[in-house]
Amino acid sequence: MVETFAALAEPNRFRIVELLRARPRHVNEIGERLQLNQPQVSKHLRVLKDAGLVDVEPRAQQRLYELRAQPLRQLYDWLERYRDVWDARFEELDDVIEQIKRNEGARKVEGVRAKEKSHGRRKRK
Amino acid sequence: MVETFAALAEPNRFRIVELLRARPRHVNEIGERLQLNQPQVSKHLRVLKDAGLVDVEPRAQQRLYELRAQPLRQLYDWLERYRDVWDARFEELDDVIEQIKRNEGARKVEGVRAKEKSHGRRKRK
DNA sequence: GCAATATATGCCTTGACAGACATATTCCTA
DNA sequence: TAGGAATATGTCTGTCAAGGCATATATTGC
Image 1 (cartoon, chains in turn green, blue, red, brown):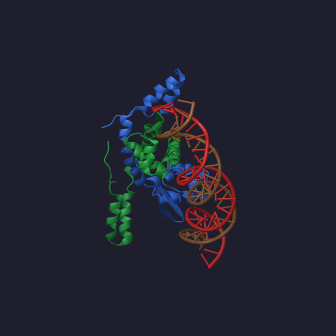
Image 2 (cartoon, rainbow over the protein chains, first blue to last red; image 1 turned 120 degrees about the horizontal axis):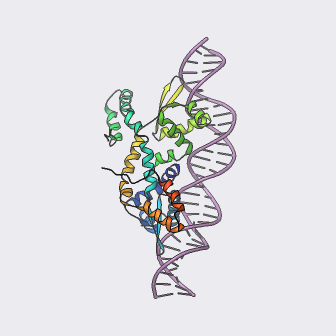
Image 3 (cartoon, helix red, strand yellow; image 1 turned 135 degrees about the vertical axis):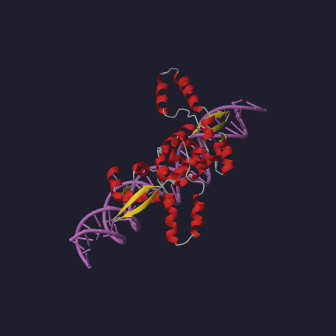
């Protein structure tokens, strides 16, 4: 779990993962798309592989890297244990209220709303 | 997103988050539970706070730290964009098959199963 | 106001890691 | 089999962050 986080905590590695979401790619393709030197790409891919986030498939002298589901699924499972946190608590709402109190006005509240958009309480089950 | 990962990538910080899942705690309580020096706890909490993962509430001279939902929800949303990865692909199964081929036997497969438990293909919708 | 408690901050050292660059390795093809 | 393409690895350097320790800050009750 922590290893997954560590792998994704590096901006360029995160970008690589995002890129691989669409489809598998080989090393040079990644380097070109993300404007990274080839050795750097290889090293990042190594870390991702060690973390189990990608898999390699040799294609002649190229290597096709593809995302692996397992760590993502594991992350998903981990997050579900935190369901209670965002089902039960209302600190988002509290934030807005506090913001209003702090600013004694409604001007800034707009900003908060914008920042929090797409995080509206989600109904489930 | 990356900042969230970075915050959770540190083992002790991860433990703190896990601890706060049950309920809010104050600094010393965390330090005792996790066997960490007080300054270290404060510093980790600072990082978590900067990442938006926790919130503080002063209680006399103590500070009550509690989990915030927003980054976790955001992480959850991010992961859902990867649904396709684990709905469409079957590399987990491929792994097992490959493992069998590599070991020319069924002994090791048990281990794989154990490692992959609780990640069974989830039906949805 | 002062001691005591709870927490935050500053400084220092050390280890890890990302990037740049050079070079090794592997595999294909002519 | 030599050469070239694709990728991996090694070395070096600079940066950053975690832990340990000392100290500052804040809040309470006396």
